[in-house]
Length: 197
Image (cartoon, rainbow, N blue to C red; front, top):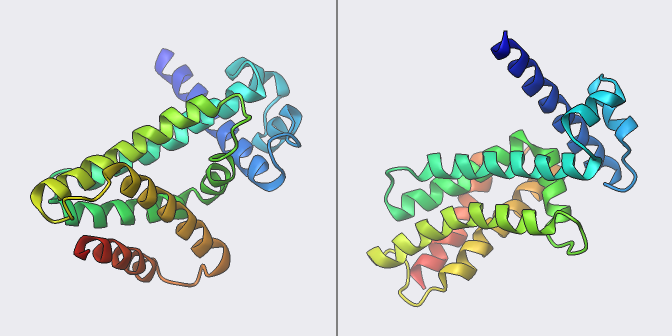
C-alpha cells in the first residue's frame, strides 16, 4: 500500500514540475501563480501545498530535480570513456537532455544569471555539480595530454556547459529542423579546436 501511495505522490509531484516549468517558461516566475500551476497539472490548489510549502519551494525542488537529472546523464555518458570521447559524449548528452526538456532548459538559461532570487545559492550548487562532471573530464584530458597542459579547467568546463546550453536552446527555438548529429558535430568542432591549441 505504501509503494502505491509513494508512486502516486511521485506522479503528482512530476505533474506539478511539468506544469510549473511550462508556465514559468511561458510567462515568468512572478506572473505564475499556484492556482495556475494547479490548474495546468489538473489538481486542486491544496495538492500543490501538500507537496510543496510554497511556489518558491516548488521551484527550488524543480531545479534540484531537473539539474539532478542532467548531472546523472552526464555521469552515465562519460562512464569508462577516454577523455576526448567523454567530451563528445557530454555534448551529446546535453543536447539530448535539452531536446527532451526544452522548457526546463529555457527556464534554466533565463534563471542562471539572476542573482536576486531566493534559490540562487541552490542553483549555484546544482550547476556546480553538473559542471564538476565536465571538469573531471577536462582535467583527465589535460592529465592524459589530449588537451593542452595550460588549459584553465574551470573556465573550459563552465564554457562547455554554457555554450552547450545556449547552442541547444538556440537550435531548438530557431532551427529545430537541424539534425542533432549536425549540432553535435558543430559543438565538437569547437572542442577539437581547443584540443589542438
